[in-house]
Length: 449
Image 1 (cartoon, rainbow, N blue to C red):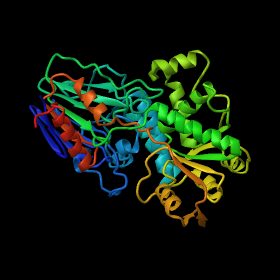
Image 2 (image 1 turned 45 degrees about the horizontal axis):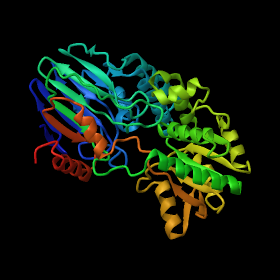
Image 3 (image 1 turned 180 degrees about the vertical axis):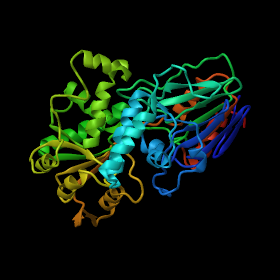
Image 4 (image 1 turned 45 degrees about the vertical axis):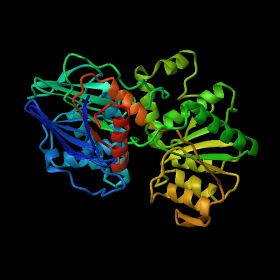
């Protein structure tokens, strides 16, 4: 029965240690130093979002001999520009799909920060030079390291991975972010681990360590069906603030599935998010990573990421035309929490209109425009957007259940598939979530009381 600890930064190993430099007791800012086999590995290089976003890069990160990236969300890669700008010139290991997502996400982030194009181009070239892509389940050596690293599918977003690090004296598994079982498009997280030696340490995310996801895929489809059919009858628009990586693609999967089942009509779907378009195209190129259900649909002529009523909105002037188009339409536009992007223009038009539906498909953090819209919709009043004071008369809906993170039972199931675990360190979760998950594991006899 393994030991399990929460909110703990340092975990000793026989030939080194794992030190959490970020995400010790919060969800974002993932960054860990794994010192094993005579090598200093940095696992992820994320930025903290919502708390102290200007925190400087730790010196321990700059001392690493190599960087291992689990996936392409900014809270795992957002510190890369600062790291490379400091003169750090060592190898970066990730899957091919993660590299492609990283390029898209970081380029977009740097543009949003108004970094000059010349500097962005230089950074992307440097990123390409230093990156070494690895396939899943293929052990690779790191120069100077007495051991190997291996990526295992994490099922979170395209290319996401858990990392297994093995030396003569230590075996460590860093979970990265773990996707829910049976989610659309991607395969489930790896559940097969060798039983030939002890696992000294598992560092495991606990984003939803304090809760169980109550909404099933059937619930998601019923909610979407109701909202879309209602808008179709009223010849109204449904505006969906989009999270470009993962959430947009899963949403397209559900809409395609509902049309295929004839539960909703072929409502025009405008994908009005440049970054979302690039990520969706990356998904299409990486079909080898899709689950069997999605591959079967594609083989039978039903591509859930490219259906007949879906059209791409690439230019800004075309986005303006969509805003002026009347009739029923679903508009998926960036950004997910309404903090910028093309969704702002659509909201300026739609929020005062009682016929419009605004559908949120993810958590809206405190202080974001999305959260403010939800609050004003409940209490009344106006919201200032794009220089205008707007009443919120639109119908505000929230689609729950699209989380790309395992809940507490699913996390415990993932952990249970790993044999001979000696110690589990929790991370990537709020203090309450980590504590609640520890209690949950104790109650079920997974770890000692």
